[in-house]
Image (cartoon, rainbow, N blue to C red; front, side, top):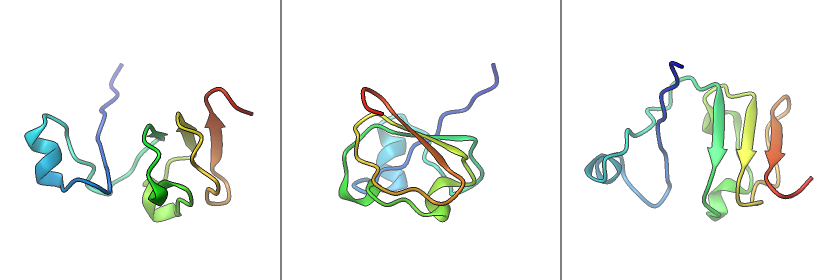
Length: 78
C-alpha cells in the first residue's frame, strides 16, 4: 500500500543495519514510529527522534515520555 519501512537502532550504525538487509532511517519524515526494542534511549523520545510521526506504537512498554501532540499506543498495556 505504499509504506516503506526504515530502521534506526542506537546500538547499530547505518552501515551495520544495511549489512543486515535493513534500510537505515536518514532522519527524514515519518508517519508512524514503532518501538520494538527496550533500549534506554527510547524511554524519552524527542520530536527529532520521530521525524514528524504523530503516533508511536510501543511494542515493549518502554516509552515513558513522548513529545506533545504525539500519541503513544502500547501493545498489551493502556
